[in-house]
Image (cartoon, rainbow, N blue to C red):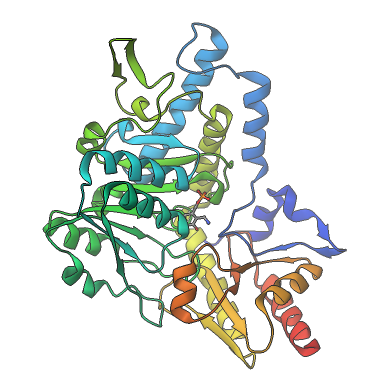
Length: 405
Ligand code: PMP
């Protein structure tokens, strides 16, 4: 199905505005996407029609809010084809999901001298929690390298796995390079050696069809705000046998079964990992974002984003002195680049004056920057609401800026 992009754009009120008197061109979708009216309306309706604290009260509003909250859990289960709703834990984002696993899986399964393999292309949030865990437990982090194309050298994985390896932490899609990693193959290698796999799906969930059972991953995490949904909501999927063996991450209301001063018993999954009042309105609104994305069709969105990526790449590489980082065929709609003689920060701030929103800097991936011997890049990242015309304006603005230096 071809998407009617102009019609889709009408759903996004924020895209209608002008920035410095120029039509907004929003190319920072890997950082966070924008929200359609259909999603914003559900947030408003939650607060105006059926807001109450979930799971606990015996009144109409609380019941309605509970139902809507749990409906989103079922939508997420269906979205990623998880076996059961008990495996869908709501967090405040990918970062919290990773910290939950690093703490809780770490408590149960990581001991002194154990090893955790982390890829070189990870976002800081899929590095630092593992380093903290390694520090607490006296474990070791082993790096899985990438090559200069920005591809994971996953054929080296087998030789990096030792009898002490307990977990591999890897991103599904790189937020800098757009590289899509062969998660199913990595999971097969890991499991053949009795190693668990954690996948950071922050950049994948809005662009790829995710089937956690087919991928056979042990953990999978993502954020609603990169999926046209609210910020402050994330998901952790985990295999049930692992989640059941893992201790709670945070203590508080909702995660308990019975509390006595002599000892406390914990609630069943998924509530064991959802202490306190969660982001009720956010989770309910996330359900609307999943519906919206479902109506667009993730495959349709991805096909259009790939067209945009290919078009932008062809135009950008014609600019003298411009180098693209991440050239793996079939990558996701993210393009990171530098221009010789112009600092990425200057490019980003001047593009802003043309109404064009891009991201500049290290993109929370210092080790990746170090691999390429750079401090940062300019990153343009596409969503289904972007157009070829926007890329034309972007390329012409870039040329004008470069000519000023
Ligand atoms: N991993 C990747 C690959 C990301 O791109 C991001 C967001 N930039 C994160 C993790 C962290 O996500 P969040 O900030 O939503 O927790």
